[in-house]
Length: 565
Figure 1 (cartoon, rainbow, N blue to C red):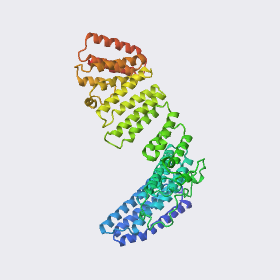
Figure 2: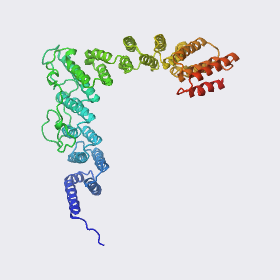
Figure 3: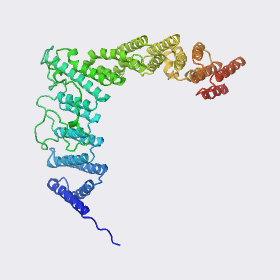
Figure 4: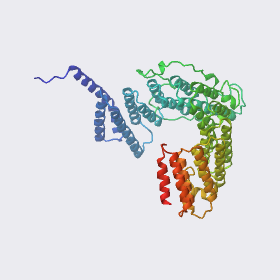
């Protein structure tokens, strides 16, 4: 028997890897000599750094290198960069020198090799982008985004982040618009991209309006240029000094270009099929007339395109409506979006509640309750009434009662407003019962709300923290004692439960609440007639719920309560 000899291919591969590592290590010699000459590191520290770098180079050059190998290597270099920064500050070196730029180039070099090895790792690309943004490496960021989008054309976070960087950091609205349009060609069914594009056009329209106001222009062609956004841009003569100084050469282009990656395995942006997408470059400001309606015309077109691409997506339209409330330029479009929502999804309870919540959500930034909150609450209630008048249904009435009740739980709500909102919820419950569209949960809320209406405004927060709980009435009875001061409210709650039992005789939760309210009315010393009534009612409920899912709660809740009484 003979031991197998190592093949020549294996020896050649190892020799080639050693040559590449040696080449990389030799390229470090000038920077390490400069660090030692400046007194930032001692000779022994440089030796330790060289040994660690060589070990990591062999790890990342092996055929089966892992992502953690690159991350640990990057952590070593970032720690070394932080050490150099601390020692420069201690030695009084205020200006950055060649060692600082060299270590940053090395970090980018490691990121580049890791991204080439793990092209589909979106988190790795994001980490590289985060590092480049922290170092203000704009020119390098342009290349990073180009490579990342070429290999990950279906990554929505990458597209939106690249467009936001072009718009916010570089004040290049045209490049941001082109990126968003290109992203939508590759991901036409992405709600997040459509919302980002719509929000971008709204913000751009608002900046155009502010620029016109600052220049004293009422309107007219040529009042604003899409590539020159005054609001948010840097002042004249002010430049951001970052890592690119002394590191990258070349002119700054008119926006990042996708497709810099040599090997595109995922069908990158260079191979994207040009889906029908009307170009709005000519309408970005220069060809629009004055006024908010004109500057928001592009945003309106984007909304219509989004609805045409995703007609059944309710959250897309609601997101566009919320974006209109965040930006002043969205006011001309808001009414049209609300109309389209009511026309297309008029029977949807989620849409009705969302439309009612919008006015109050816009006042969330103001902590104290004021006139704006009161006006928003009136508008919300009017929206609910309009939805109920247009398409009443049991599900919609249930959602409306739950929303009004949830409003009473908001922090900082005046006690008088809490009482009025509880009365409004009672009115909604009565209307649902009269229309025959009350669900079991509506009857439970109706019963619990009678106690909330009977309590004084000062006692609401302490005695009844959540009126939607079935045990709320019993808890109140136990806290309030047996003086009978609010027996009328207890009787009204029982009447609501009995009305619900007639409409929904096989609902277990409603039956449990009815039994618990009767136990609360009996008090600690029930009479024989009370016990007989409880026994008859229990047998009646048990026979009605026989074979019904959830009937066990009657035996647990009703029986347990009776034993306690």
